[in-house]
Length: 492
Image (cartoon, rainbow, N blue to C red; front, side):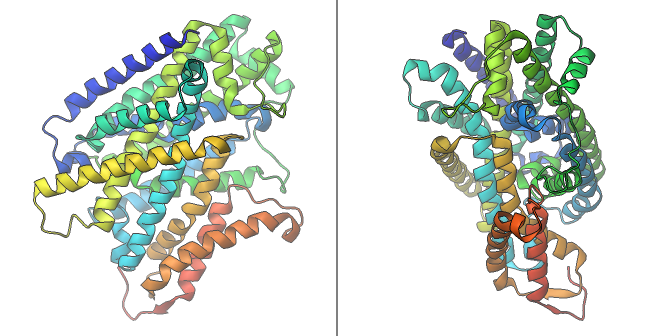
């Protein structure tokens, strides 16, 4: 497909985003930037969260991952539903009762200032790495199919993407993000659906027949029953549950959108609706993956490989989409761009919010609206630059499916948050030594990493997978228990 057409599609979609930003950011103040004026309709947030949760990694890695992992990603998704239930019934009531803007303010109330900063720092680290990798994948594909042929360096499209996101979130913040996410969810899902439909039409086969053929070849296996396998279904379900609790419920990016709802009841309806939609959407992406592989086998299409001759999962979807027709190529580009924007815009806003409230404590200082706006804008720009540096720095290391890499990072960076919140919510009669918390939060991931490396030797061949998050959180919890003392009165 002509690179100029792809670029034109990208530009037109970006213009559409700026139109939405213009209307949503009018008369916006700092309350709108950080809290969306507490006026977001719950169903709009629920729908937009689909795109924000999926990102460019899911858009490409989940379909491509069917080639090596079949449908074993699905038990992880079933675990997501359980995790969303915990968020709706336990975490959201806490956040609304305390009227939080940054959810890490709870850690100061419960433990102390060092705990708050530790939690906020781990969120910033996790989101800078995880979300930047999601965004990297979008930049990577556009570079490979557009800018590379023009001799443009990789950093150029990365700068363009980050600059655009910075500009359209600069004024409206989370108020703008809630509405742009709805547009991006629509195009992301439309891209997956239309590509699958086009493949079925091209092969003159129904979805049922395709899945039946894919099943006969072993591509639709859902449950891995080997307990030593890193995708054993039981630990996939448990991992999915805790991934959702941490990467959504303990994540300022995702919770900031939920906290823009008018009240707790609306936020809970939003979360439970999102969980059900998420199951349907991920099933769609897995079916798309089966369609991509079946198409390659039936037509003799050569799947993309690296220098060692190994199939690169993340390149399967774009390679097939670009080979089918101009229409599927355009649809793919729109979906990919939508996924990239939806992943990054909320993250950039959340990073700014966390730093402003957990490190600079805007809510506790006597500052004018103009002063807050000034500092907030500079912080927003600074995080955009950090975001850009991570994307560029990761370029030499992209040699595997990024969705596994994103979850692996989350296992180490969100584990301490899981331990902190679990202890804070369920251990009411002990006071943690606040100054010990930063050391505990660093030690737990290090020990978890060593356990994962040596798990086959230590546990009779058992390989630790995504459940590293649970192990990390448990180690943090036990260490907090060790570095705490009994109180006569119930804590906050």
